[in-house]
Image 1 (cartoon, one colour):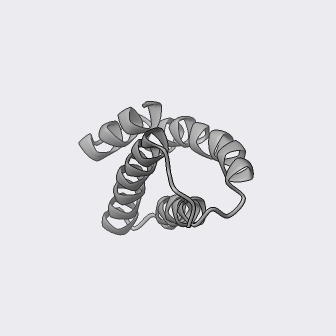
Image 2: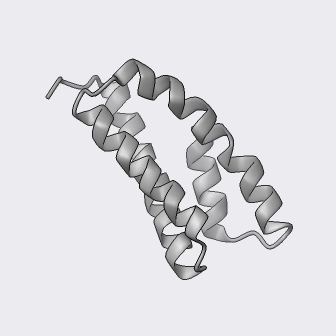
Amino acid sequence: MNSLSTLEQVVLILLGITAATHLYAGVIEGAPPVLLAGVGFIGGMLLYARGVRRHGLAIAAIPYTAVQIPLWYIAKAGNFTLVGYVDKIVLLC
């Protein structure tokens, strides 16, 4: 496994937080797309940590992460939760 810089470690921690919030919300709300997003974050983290196509993963992570905020806003339509707000703050970091 390739060594990770401090910045990469911080990014993986933030991704772990957002993955956990997606998994939690997906299970509690019974929302398979949210659960699948959490699984996607975990999969990306594991591949990145193992050194698999890091450059490609970093490029793919930008739109994958960016689309989460507008989809959340549209899907929730005013029924926002604390977990959702925490997740979006982490995504913006």
